Every structure is written in structure tokens, then in C-alpha cells.
Image: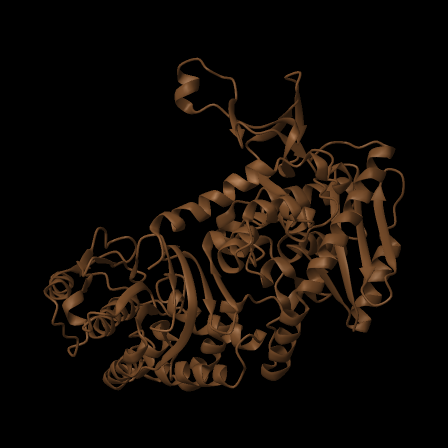
Length: 619
């Protein structure tokens, strides 16, 4: 079995497909156009792939490329290039809510497909990421956008340039394929073990499908279409665990407030629900609790230690030990949930398997609040989130009984404290009490220092020297996140943790890709680079650039609003990017000139992350 990385391009007068053999590196190109028709050799090539059980690997190929290819296969004897273009155009212009009508199901697919887009869950609105952004995050030397507008009739030279562009995208896809191999191998193992395809499943879909398989086996009459709708609302008093008790009046006020609520919606319904105890704000929400000290630096020393306390797989285990389940699925759901949890413990932390099973555990909980899911029961969701917050408050209340124990953070599934070293055993005894009371398990880590901006943005250094990074201080980012100006969080960390001057770090940094920024413009808008003569130069929608001493201005052109049009203003709105600073476009790395970097911009960005912490002081 050989994997072939591929991509297609479709225009009214040319269709082309390129494939690269991942074992030999051999390239295969087929074209159907006004200048040549290689449909027969293309069909023969696909027949060989199908015969040998080879796979085709692409980016959004399940949603676009393969349906076009499948159409060509089915109509190979009476099709021309314009027919292919019209098919591709119909897929592109299909409304989002009807997108599945173009999908070729696995049972009908003739050559197995691996879709990196689906594996990484980029088909989720919150993670939607195109190949050009991936090229930026891969630090490719060149980022190329589609050279011609869709629907344009191309001449011979333009066709050749289009093919060059296609090979560039294939190179980018193969680099991303290399980064995804461990995930693919894991899905291959699952496919073999369960005799069903998991190849293009994202992490949480793997967990959900596993649950469905077990429910089909163990729950009589299970039907994936069943839901528990709770049309009459959810009376919160009915779902709060009866053993939840508080001593603090403020916590009791929150508990009383929850008991008086009836929920008809499960998103954004808890607003401005908070309490303050010993100067620390506890903020409650439908998804979880959070709270943090003001921006500051926390350091351990010979007298004080910093302890991070997390509940192991908190929300899944809340369901397991309290026998919570979506009503239509029955109590057997809890047994299946526990089996997944036990499986996860057989894999070491940091392994792909452990991470995916963790996402599977949390994904099933998250899906319980989706009307499209077989796990849907909003009362089950709220039972976990509300009780989860209150139980964490019980732990916090117990810990802060000691006047010298200071709460630093609380967030969804754990909290962090600073306490005297001679109170360490007292803290553990309090945690042991909570574990016995709740039947949940706590996990501990000790930090030597923390640099906190807020609950979602901080650096924590473990006592072994390793680093935990969150939010704006993180530079080991997921593929869907913005990898712009990574020199900034790197310089900040070096400054805070190692004492390196962040200005000198930035001025002496040699990984030039860390100075790059990217901007992504929606198709309804456009991007221009304005030179020193004031002339606009149109840019790619996904554009790489850096802040420079010499350069021009980046400006986003957006359509006028309805109000502007009503008032007779039809010109595009011009919105500056990094206004007040010069920029140099660098979609080709050869356009980068290190001696022109405007280090001051990066230094000021670093100052924004450092100064609030220094202002808060060391506690």
C-alpha cells in the first residue's frame, strides 16, 4: 500500500491533477484541457491505484477533490473539461448546510482517501484552517495563493503557472502529511482492530464512534436518532448533588441562587454570577468556573511552595462515579465511559493514544450539549458543569481555611495555591478528605514560579525546570492557531524564567520565521500593500509579512456597510493593519532582509506581556 499526495485544479478550459508517490518521490501529472486530453491515461492510473489498494492523500479532498474525481470516473466516456469545471463549481457553491450532498460515502469511494483537513478537525467552525495558513505555520519558504480568479479562461502560459502552483500545494500537503503520520498510524490501528474505518475521523469523533459501537452492543434498542430534549427546561435544584455543603456565606449564596434557577438554554445563561472570598473572585459559568489573582509573579522559596491540583479527567469521572448519563442511553453509558477512562490509563502521558482518548472522554461530554448528537441531553451536561464548579469550590473552601494558604487560580478542573511548606501535609490531608468525599482523584504538580496575567494566560515553571505555557505566552501552538511573531513569547519566557533581557533576545534572535506575521482576509475583502508613493499593490488573502524599518502600509479593503451605502458612500472601507508601523511582505523568504527588521515593534509587544506582571510585583 502506497500513499499518493495529490491536488487538483479546475478552470473552464483546464483540469489538472498532480500526484506524488510518498515512497519513491515520483511525480504523476494528468491534464484535460484544450491543449491535451489525458483522461484515458488518468483512468488507467487510477485503476492501478485501486487494484493495488493504494491511498490518495489530500487537504479537504473528501469534501472537494475526490467528489470531482469520482464524477470524472463515472462519466469518463462522455465528459469534457467544462463539465468537470461545472461540477467543481457546483461543489464550491453548495450552501454549508447542504455540503454533505456532494460527499462520496466510504462505501462508494473507489480509491481510499486520507483527508488531513478532516483528521485535524478543520471542518469545525472553531478550527477552520486553510492550506495557506498551514504553509505559514509550517514555515515554508514560499506561500502561494491561487494565481488566477476562479472561472477565468487561461492561456497556455497561465496553465503552466497553474500547474506550478498545484505542485506547490502538493509539497505543502506532503509536509503536513509528515506531521500527521502518528495520527494516521493510530487511526490505522483502530481501523484494523474494529474492522471499520477511522482513517478520516478527528479525535473526538473517534471517541464518539467508539461509544456508539459499545452502545449498539450493550444497550438494547439503542437508536442513534434518539435524544432527550428537556423541552420543559431544567430545574437546577433537581440536579445539584445533595451532599454539597458550604461554610462560607458567599458560597452558600451562590448555591442558593443555583437552586432557584430553571434553565431553558444551556449556553451563556449564567452571566455576572460570582462571589468574592478573601479578595479572590470566583466566576461561575455554564462551561466551568474560573478565577485568578491579579497580574503578578509568584515564586517559591525555602518557606513557601506552589502546588497545582487538578482533578483527573474531571467531567468524565463526575459522570462515572455519580452514575450520570443521558436519560435515553441508560446507566450502561457509565460503564462504557469508565472503560474508555481505564484504557487511557494504559498509555503514557504525552503519547498520541493518551491524548486522543482524553479528547474522546471530553468529546462525549461536549457532544451531550449538541442536538445533532446521539448523546444529547442538556440536563446531563448541566449536571456535570454545575456540580463540577460547586465541588471545586468545596475544595477551595477547605484549603483556604488556613490563613497562610493563598488561592492563585481556579479553572474548570483544578486550582493552584501558594502555601507554607510546613502546611504541605495539611494540604494533602484536605485533598484526601475531598477525594474520599467525592470519590474523585486529584493529581499534583509543584511549580517553582508562576507568571500570571490571568487564568488563561500565564507561564508556570515546574520544579524540574520544565515549562507550562498558556494563552499569549505559549509558542508551541496547535495547527489552527496563529503562529505570528513567535519571537515575542519566546523572548518573554526567556526574560521571566532565565533573566535574559527581552530586548537583547529579540535583537539577537536568528530564527527569522519567528519574526513573521500573517494576516488572513475573507474572500469578501482584499488586502493591499501601500508603497511610499501611496500606490496600492494587491496582496494574497493569506499574507506573510514582518515589521520593518523600510516598507509600506498594509491595508484591508472591506465592502461598505449597508448604512454607508444608504448614505451614498460606496467606496471600500480602508482598515490599517499594524497601523503606525511599516511592513514588508514576505510570501517568498528571499524577500526577507534581516537588517531591516524593526525590532522596536517586537520589543514593545514583549513589554505588553511583561510590564503588567512586573507592576503586580512578586507575591
